[in-house]
Length: 426
Image (cartoon, one colour):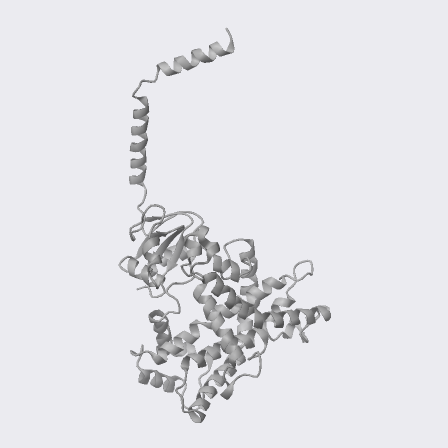
């Protein structure tokens, strides 16, 4: 008997067991099993209507303020789920549920989402703030937490922060005396944050001579405005992320605006960083910028002076440039925003007379307020917290990205979703 004959006999034997209704039976069984599995699975969080393929893309593209549309569409739910083109987003309005994402399931939701703007700003995710979980993130986190923002360095920069606070008061005071114009509180407090960060990072308050009355020049104003522009675009709802195959067209202009803002930051940062690195190389690495390592005055010196286990520079030039920008962006917005809204709000967060009374009781009238007094100024601290809650700089905190699915708030959170926590969560 040949091989072909044996194969034909086996096939005929198998077909004899299959009736004409077998395909229909298999189909029905598959559907029943799928329904049973779906019922056993936790439901997805509620949210806007999700159309096939496009999700909620059409209404969000037709809305001028996309974050406000998201807030309006999800305001009645503690947690909502939506798909917007290629993005899957979980919007969290409840602190308890946010704690589940960021604490209980931290390992699954500790990464950052990738986007067109974050990739360009971070030069391929070389810094800390926007980098996804991985070796580079671990490396930069160790540098920032151990070398740059440790408690001892925080104590050593107390005088720098106190000097900048004095400059802010003097600047406003001089404007009151020598100018009849309305005082721009926003410009003043943003200049305070910018000068403080430049002093801590670069060892200088201004890029040039500074402005009138100790205020900012055009260079400092341009620098800080570029930083706020980058902050507003990092995780904005960009068409390039919602519909990736249209990204090359840059229809909403996010890519062009980001490149211009990053160009401004690089224009001011790069020459200082490159000059400082060159000085360190010429000195053989024993002294950086003329300072012994144990007496380094600014954070740029620290980053340049870091060495790996082989005695080579720990950070590349691009890594230093990105991390310097990260430090500036991370701290320039919140303090200025809190002060601005606390002063300018139509409905004051707290009773100003009660705040003055607390200052008189805790500090007295014989000296200025010091940073060490803040732990005792409970009412003023509560005003700052409430100002941040009522008037956040952005609608959402920096988003998290899941690496796998999880059960959160008795609902299913799929893998590879973006978790957006509302800053004004109730």
